[in-house]
Image (tube, rainbow, N blue to C red; front, side, top):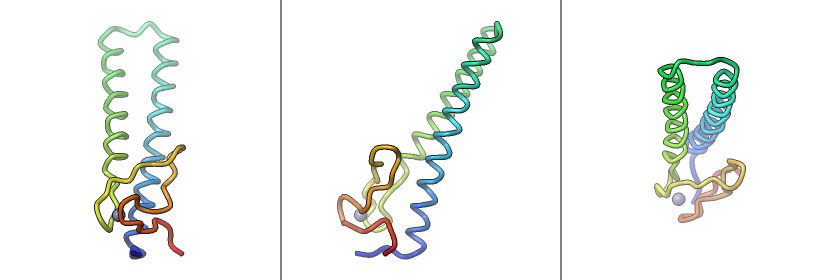
Length: 98
Ligand SMILES: [Zn+2]
């Protein structure tokens, strides 16, 4: 079972989005942590920053869970280190062009 070029492009673009989102989320977490450590922020600002981080984290997780095999709809689970698996775990469609 082979995927079309467009389907392959789609899942690779999705995977790139997930990686970028995680990097942005981690970067934001570090910035928020540094700012909170350096300045005595008012409680409202701390809550706002915390909410922003949670929203980013939720968005990253939601985007990650949206990935599905274009062929059969099986959700794609990342191998360790946010790598795309070689093929769908259900229909065996390859996620890489030959
Ligand atoms: Zn599949």
